[in-house]
Image (cartoon, rainbow over all chains, first blue to last red; front, side):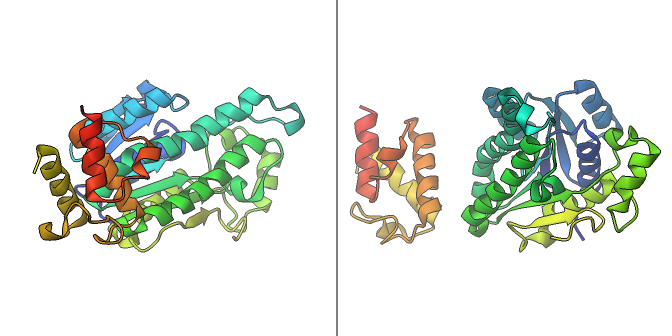
Length: 246
Length: 78
């Protein structure tokens, strides 16, 4: 089950921890993967590790032209077009809202939300023609619960849910699904930097008693990308160890 | 039939999967040919691609029948 042989997937933010795991998981299921991100070295290293069926296309997702170029190049590289789009790229510019600058708001919205809209719009056309497509957005628990210091980030992640639900309704009868995966606390460089006391406090909020792994997220993405998930659309899968049951 | 008309009808037949005989000048995409709103967007995009013209949204809204499409494309490619 959940094989992706013959499918091509574009993963944005593939140089990050979660993006990296998603790309590996899709590749392991047989998909051709196009790795996009800002850090070319990390992307090349990942492509080297994966071997065949892996390609690197760098892009600046804050920029409309760069996104258009990414969509075009990805479709050329993938030959048959992109079947699976994973809108994973995300940035943070944390700060209490009273002190948050317009630039911090805009930068986060542009990369986290607008880039997903632009890429989905560009790649939908091919999916519509082929009557098959999978669009998966990586949101966050914070999009549902809010988080002090992350008004911009939380808004962008909640926005992704609304945009995905609308898109899902528009294209459902074309064999295209659009869904969201919302991670909770995931073990990354950011959580590694916490001290023991902070770590303990964090874990107290998670019934599963551990942080999530990038692979926990990747597994949900593989499912949503698969043929077997054809009847799942407009959904949000919360992968958070029971931290918030929504 | 002009070249444009023939190409338009071919695109409509392909995209909507309807019988060629039904694709007459007066046929309405939605009422007669069973298109939904997404189909009409796809058709407009296919016309743009085929004829290298740009069909702005306000013009696209007025393209309701096969004849509307042919006239718009013939006008804009003059």
